[in-house]
Length: 399
Image (cartoon, rainbow, N blue to C red; front, side, top):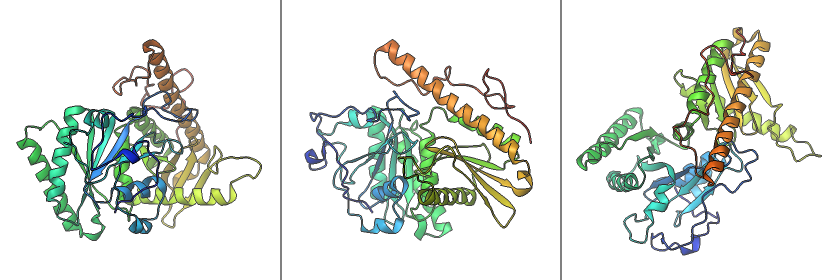
């Protein structure tokens, strides 16, 4: 279900009949923060567009993922009747803007500025209600995707087959298969075989929506290969079974190691973050300082009755590393902690070099145009035997 939100947008009062006037004075889309804690400081932040038919669940997804709203509370949200821009970069590592579009918007209206909307778009998430007749939604998906691709061929297209919590496992698979086949056949018939659609089964009543949004966000992070490599090195030298690099606010994991993601493990890690944040907010705040409850001293250790350990360590203000390992492999915690410090230092270097590259590019071009996501010469590489050290060599110990 969608909501008539209260966020303030410069164009809210000018939105009429599904049109988006070209002559309206758009504000610059650069981030409004000072960038002091921004890992993408100086870089234009991509926007993620949430689209779909009315009542498909777009605004509920936004509220649950980025505003920690209880799924049950979304039942009271009203339908969206205007474009909602939600800037989440002030409280999260995930440096994007989410634009929630009303279902009745007409992209072919002559007053709709497709170049402005799709030109700065990093990903387009199209939400389809799996419990409803989705033929109209497939037609709208086809029109939206083909229109957006003409403007910006770099857009990542993601299809959320939503509200699957009310379907059986067999019905979920059949629905996904049918939507996948019909959507791709429509593109093939229109001669748009080059457009790639990614499909996700989602529900706000479990962690599938966080998992799906994690996949969306990861595609927009140019440092992802380096982060994955660092995590692979960390777990191989620390006897860790699985590691996630989480955005603490949204519980989106921006990177994980190369081993397959088990949904149950991911849910355990999400629950652990909730526990740590809740306890920190109660006992971790200091009255004399306006300090965040989650800081560089934050860590947590949870032992499960099956011999598994969940271990959380703070990486920076926005990020946390959550590891899963066997209790037998935790007897040398000092080695794991040392390796974590090396990992955290390497993460800092990744984004320091990224910001230096952006600053150099901005200085040369006298503009704020972003560095191409394909540029890797200024991103540190990692060998297969350890993390990045002071001189670019390995400084990770083996347990």
